[in-house]
Length: 164
Image (cartoon, rainbow, N blue to C red; front, side, top):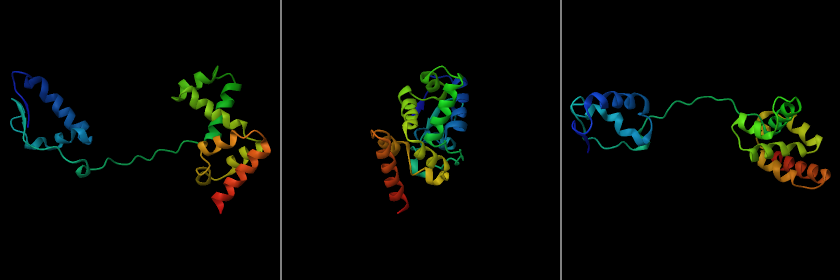
């Protein structure tokens, strides 16, 4: 039982706050007990609620928002390279700040530009659903290889594994 007596929290201050919580935060599982404010007694003088918290699986699901997928990491790396060459940004640290990433993450993405031209063009020309298979993490392993011929061979092997 939750209880806030008038002596501790005046109702003039708490009531608007409770209504704000009810209207804006009722879908958050930790605040799920607010969804049952109707069972509370005398909201203006004191806040006494006899209801138990709802279980998270009983809560209505928030609506899905269709957000566009981020571009493939190789396309992002090429965009970063354009920004650096055009002096739009001064360095990779500034790129990281603008895009809300760490400097290490920007470096990981920029390292994809070390892939041979053939691999980069193959990736750019692929349809987006096929590009998803060739994640930045998988390509990072290919970048680690010393020679371009080894990188192309590893990429072709990965491509045949995906297609076959």
